Length: 337
Image (cartoon, rainbow, N blue to C red):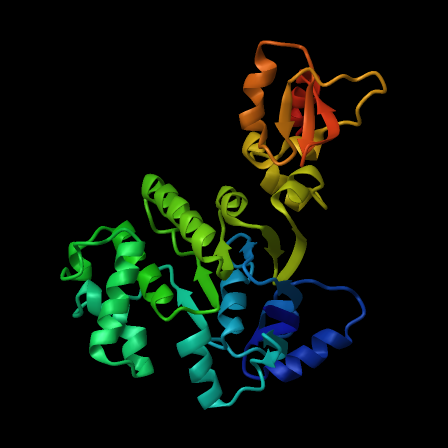
């Protein structure tokens, strides 16, 4: 659905000249300030996002993640490289094609909500459809459907200032969904919310994704949020991807000390599954009715191992793939990688 190839974004008076200078260096320098008066925000990044996948990009402030997501719809103009959506180059699009892309195929949810303060909730949600040229009755009916979908039925006639932060972000999400985009881009949408409301919005997004299966790129600086939401996660530093993988791959096999620092406090019981840590069955192993699914998270398997030393068979589609016991579980949970 979405492919990004050798993408660069350099801020400064002559970015193309800076790019040539950086690419010609042979000393491997990795500073963000490789060329006087310029900042390399995104450095030669490549990745693909499959249809229906939630791809999370995370990193500390200044790592380049927000610039990267803005490049995907050319809100920030890439210095070099290409972005391809469903086989079509975004970088080659003219202004008309780019407007059509943003109106019909790609929607963005911002950190600061981006709501129009003088418009009621219903009109805020319908705004993208209005820009598209949809008739009033049809767009308002669609907006009402999206408002109900995100749990705000009854708030249609309120202004943004009358809503809590979490409710305002739901309006932003409803507005993005109203145009039925192929791709959703999220730029740290929950970072300004209180922890409890943030968790509620994460759960809401997971619920919507389970039903809608939108292709999504989600930006965050919170590793716990990345683990919860992402099918795959890219950890970004100084404009580059340090490691890309599933939550389980990052927790079990961190590439370096930088990634290891992120996963140190990861909730391993919520991330790892029985299939991730199981061992091969011994020759004399007998399934005694103690069975768990290979994709069951460890937090759900714990109760089976608390009161008994007997091993548990790990199965998928009726086939026994391996075995899990209390010792294996404890080692997996205690492992600090």
